[in-house]
Length: 188
Image (cartoon, rainbow, N blue to C red; front, top):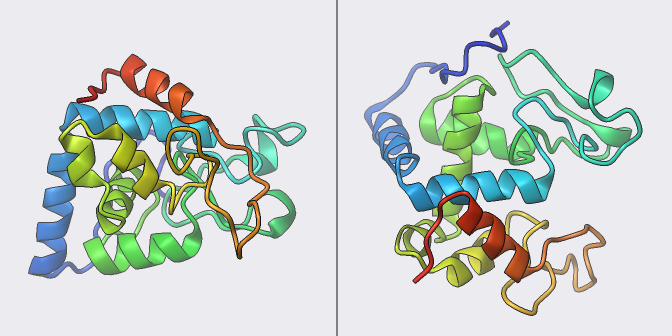
């Protein structure tokens, strides 16, 4: 079991490509706009590093079944068992497996690994370059493909699921921008 106090990512056998990707993602974490956006995501998703789905709104959400302490692996299903969204960025078990283990060779679900996975997700939806360049509007629109708590852009709702409104609450763009700037992000 990885102790809660140990936030460093744990690697399995890692090839050069995985090492390179992980190093690139770690560099992005040093960018003030990326850091501000990750803090914004955590706030709008209602997650923290040890939260399971339901943490921000379910009865008794601050403890017990809504949290986890074993960081050695993804914690699995949360509220009602219907989703595995967990952690600061509400990362599903399938996403963790694909992006943590396969893309970067990381085997745990520590805070450091969660941050690296979130950066990898931003890269996968082509949101990282606009974000580092201060184009928040484009970054939010692209990131909304992965995080339903984000709107698709100014004046827009979050993305529909199968052509219908997702039903998940989202934060309006102006509020996202305000939160992002409050965390030190810049907009051009």
